[in-house]
Image 1 (tube, helix red, strand yellow):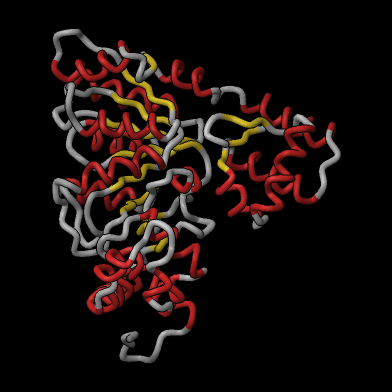
Image 2 (tube, rainbow, N blue to C red; image 1 turned 180 degrees about the vertical axis):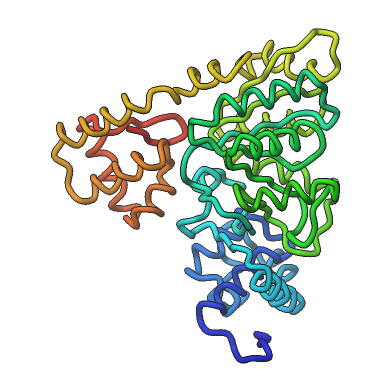
Length: 378
């Protein structure tokens, strides 16, 4: 049963929003199962209208999961959340939406629903995560500030977790350099943790934003932080670890970034410094590339070759006779850089059956390149 607002019933669009929230709240249903349900039914609303016996037959779902998942309290909780986001003008980003972060969309375990409040696109420009220990030193803070200052002209958005130490230093340095910055939180939008960083978070809304997968009322419980870290890693082109001990959230983020095929960089430190041991170990084990300044990062990421890339794209358009579908794919890669098939299909609207042949023809024309993980680039 769908609850209604005092001023009237939901229209179809709002009803779908409600069910998207409800889908994200289903117990024992993570992002992978949620996607399977949505893919099978076509809309979130259809999931809740489908017979439970048919949902149980979807591969990977099962009757036991469905029996535990669908609880009448979920719809009531979803309506409360919809009221909250409407009141506070929070954006809902569903994984099929165009404004959902396309880099994150490539990650198999990315949330099916995100909440965002801010004033930047999560898909334009470059995204760089800067993470590190909560017990930062003057050395680490200095590296962070200088790095961001030296990147200010490169259309970079700085992402971190709004925590103590390197995280908040990165956010503040970005604000001071007029560089957009996004904080990914491990709690709902009804609070800021730690409370001490509320004023910084408020400033970030005017040049960046706050992003979370958690609905309002969710406390910053310990188990939420590793989950938060996967969003930080997946949202970005690369992750920089400034200072980290052998164990800690920063290295969890770095490990996740590697799993998502993101570039990982680390600043070295003195061998006996506690909060350089993690960075030094990652460099030694070839889990992170050593950088000493912004120029190292810019060179290794290829961010200094914009003019050459633009010329290459123009040459691609001149040298190859592309049909309409092929041009759509080239335009997506031109705008977004390296992408997976799911992302290309979502943006172009081309069905997978047509997409396979289009990609093959572009490869044969040497207009695009197939990369690791079935991702494509110009």
